Length: 257
Image 1 (cartoon, rainbow, N blue to C red):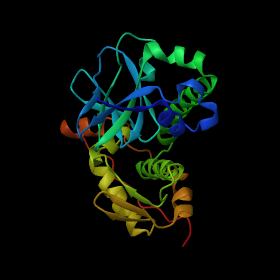
Image 2: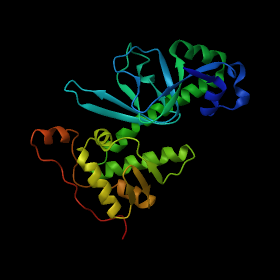
Image 3: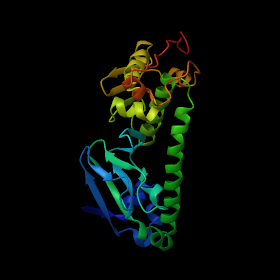
Image 4: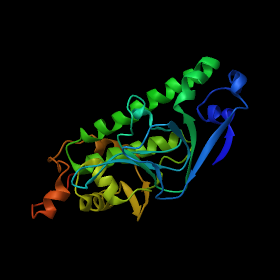
């Protein structure tokens, strides 16, 4: 495992160098993962929290019947594993969606560093707050009635994250699969492809496999607030496998002609 300095981590967290104090040159392990490699396993022992330095991750829980329920996607500056601090084991699993790196902070060191450098403690609190805010994003997505609106909200959330990282908020590269997105949104995976095509036909998006360009972000925002026919309740894939009838998207007018 490679290493860098606490100064690099704190700068990523937005702490000014003048406030770094004695932690500036403290070595911090950096873990490198290949696409598809596991960061931590569900049920695994909790030894550290990890902050995404580069790349992206999928967080998911495997149900008893083997169904993989996607809980979220994490990118640069996201803190992973924090939800296991009050437990003896990780409640979910995280895998890399691309070549990724993370800063590794051992649980036993978190409070010691906070006491040693108040700026680190403040930055850590901000990371915890940011992690909780990201979890609440799923609530906002699922509040939408239709699958198209859920997908639009999801794309807008990705857009905001890209903008926060200094990247284009309009050009998105979806590292996750359509099935991953469907699990996260609680719809059948075929619905994702249909909804993307529909939004492309309406001039909201330009879709080329995993590359998505938002053509009109204002219209997409208005579209995401629409309340239309009720969508799949999250068990659509399994109902379809048992011979049930899946939900079909209903075309609706654009936000403006």
